Picture 1: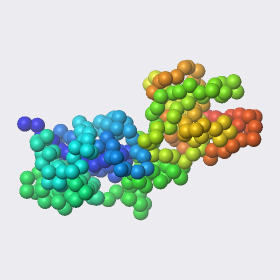
Picture 2: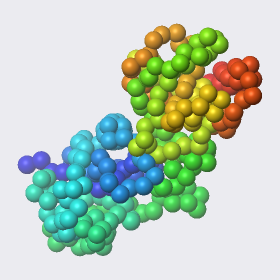
Picture 3: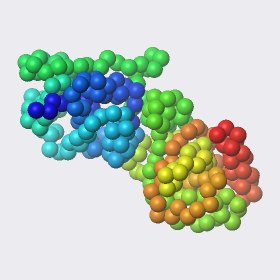
Picture 4: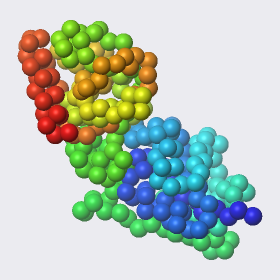
Amino acid sequence: MQKYAIALGMFDGVHKGHKAVLMGAINSGYKSVAVTFSSIPFKKGGVLNSAKEKKQKLLNFGIDEVLFLEFSEVCNLSPEEFLNYLAKKYNVAKICCGFNYRFGKMAAGDTAFLKEWCTAKNIEFFECPEVLYGEQTVSSTYIKGLLLNGDLETANLLLEDGFSITAKVQKGDARGRTWGFPTINQRYPETKAPVKRGVYHTVVTIDGKTYNAVTNIGVRPTYETEYVSAESYVLDYDGNAYDKEVETKLVSFLREEKKFSSKEELIKAIGNDAEYVKKHS
């Protein structure tokens, strides 16, 4: 009968701290399963990855299977009921989690409870210690703060696979095309963790091919929008991306969003941004 090693956690971002937990399951010799949630209703600050992105990153990392739990179905289970629920679903041989993992109704279960339960059931238990970056605990909350401050280099280092948004390309006003800087326009996903508004060096993937790009994330103060958008001038691309799902991966923060006094001033700024990206790609 197939035995399973279960990794427990939200795994938002699949950052360095999460990966230490995941490796405990992957290297166990058993079939590995990441047990997580697609979303939690009261979680603030947006997510680093959508459920689809999270699943793909977990599988890419080496997890064999991803189980998304519905929060409403398990939120009222006691810690013991929750663990028994997993034990009925899988032939559990090992459970892995982070040092601060909480579970069960009102988050009553902790790692001490989990270890005691595993011992009684003759199940291996692995508790990943705190993972630090300098003196800072690596966490999704810390990474979200880095993104809000425009510190892409550190955020991407801790995420390893980088921070990106994936959204359908919408029709814009075609203003950039008349200026010699055609752009693709995406609405910034409302569920995503917000980033510092401004201009970024990005890498855009269209139809499986990657391109360097200059992306403004914000409300375009010179030609203001009512929502946060990601408008990208994609270098060396001359196709039609309308209605396509496009990934825009943030590489570095270039400058803050600003309102220009004239069209000419804005065009010059875009040209300077594009030259910078070309030199640093």
